[in-house]
Length: 532
Image (cartoon, rainbow, N blue to C red; front, side, top):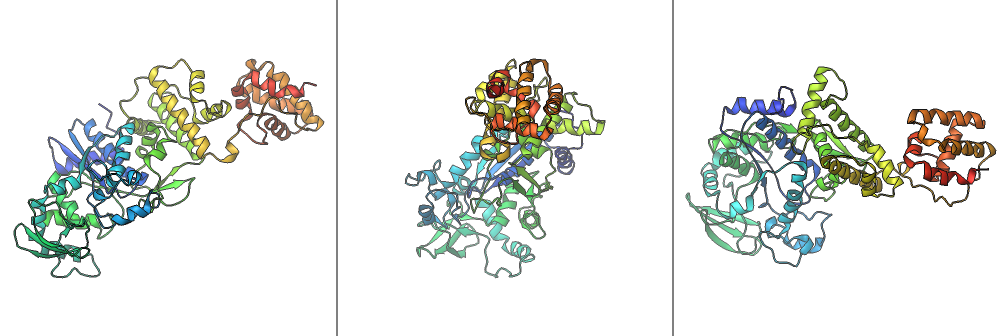
C-alpha cells in the first residue's frame, strides 16, 4: 500500500469523503461529460481528478466504484468547426446526439454503436487505459431509452413546485407556474422542439411537437422520449447511483450554479445527500494559442497531449497541480522543463536526489500517483528529453535507431524510452521553435567562406575531434574556449563558425554536448574542408 501520510490534495479529498460519508463497504466516485464534440484536455482534468481521488481511497484499503457518465441523450445544438461533413450534420440539429450519424461515415445507418456521440466516446475510451484510467461507463441515452429513470422523472413531476422555487431563486426571469421539469423528444421526428401539454399526475405525459406537429401521450414506464433537464437530472442521478464524490468546474460551482441547485434538489426531491466535491479550474494551452472549446471545435484532446507527453508525465502534470489552480498545457520549450521536473521527482522518489523531508514526502506521493500502473521496483534509466531531441535530429527521426543506441535496458525501461523518443520526435516536428530544430549538413557541402581566424579555429577544432574520446562534456567545453584563444578570435565567433559548419545556422544545441553526441566520425567528415 502506498504511503498516504502526505497531504496531497487527492489524499485530503479521500479523507474528507470517508469522514463525511462514514465507513462504507464501497464509495462511488463519479464524473461525466456530454460528447457533443471532441473531448478536450479540460474535460480530462475532471476525469483524472476523480481517478486520483479514487486511487487515494483504494490506497486506504477502501473499495471504489468509479463511474463515468456519457450524457449522450443531450441535444445536438451546434456543429463544431473541426467536424467533417458539417453541412450534412446540420440537418440533425435539435435531435439527441445518439441519433446523429458518425461524422466520418455520414451515410452509414445510425446504430447504438455507430453515431455522433459514440464516435466521440470511443476516441476517449480507447485512450484512457494508456494513462491508467479505466472507469465503469454509463450511457445515459441507453438508460433513458430503457425507462430506467421513470421513477425519478415522476418524482420530479410530483415535486415540480419545490423544484421551480429552487430554480427561481437563481433566475432573473422566473419559470412560469405551468412549467414542468421534463422535456420530450418527438417520437416521429426526434426533435426536442416540443411542448408538454399535460401530465395526468401518474405515469402519462402528453406533448405536441412544434417541428412536425405530432401529438401523443406517453407512458413514462415504457417510453424513452422523456428526459429531465440538466439541473434536475444531475441530482436525480446522484440519488440513483448513490454518488459519494464528484468534482465540477468553476462554472458549475459558481454561486447559483448547477451544483448549488442540485444540492438543494437532491435533498428536497429525492431525499438524498449531495456528494463531497471540489472545484477544478480551467486549463489553457501554451504554445498553440486559442481557447479550448468543444462546441467551436478549437480543442486540444488527450490524444494531442499524449503525442507530446508520455503517459506518466501527462499524469504528473495533473497530480502535481491542485485542481483549483489554473494552469496551461505547454507545447513550447516548456515541454523540456516539464520532462525535467518529472525526472527530478523520480530521482527524489528513489533517493537519487537529496531534498528536505517535507519536499521528499510531497514528491514521493506525486510520483506514486503519476504512474500508470504500479511504481517501478527500481529506478528506470533516465534519458533527458532535451538529449533525446538532439539525438533524434542527428538521426533524422529514427526512433528505433536512437533506442538501439541506448541499449542495455530491461524491457520496461526500453518501452518507456521508446515512448519518450516518439513523443520527442513528435514535438520536434510539430511544435518545437524553429531555432531549436536543426539537421546536420551534408559532409560534401563546400567549405564556409570564413575569415582567417575562423578557418584556424575550425582546423584546431578538427584536431581536438581527432581525440574526442578523451574528453568529457566539461573538459570539451573548456577546450572550445582554448581554441578561440589560440585562433585569436572571440569565443562567440568560434561558436557561430562551428554551428555554421555543423548545421548551417549560427545557433544550435549546447556545443560541447552536441559535438560528443554527433560523434567523431561525422564530425571529421564535416570538418574535412578545413584541414589546410
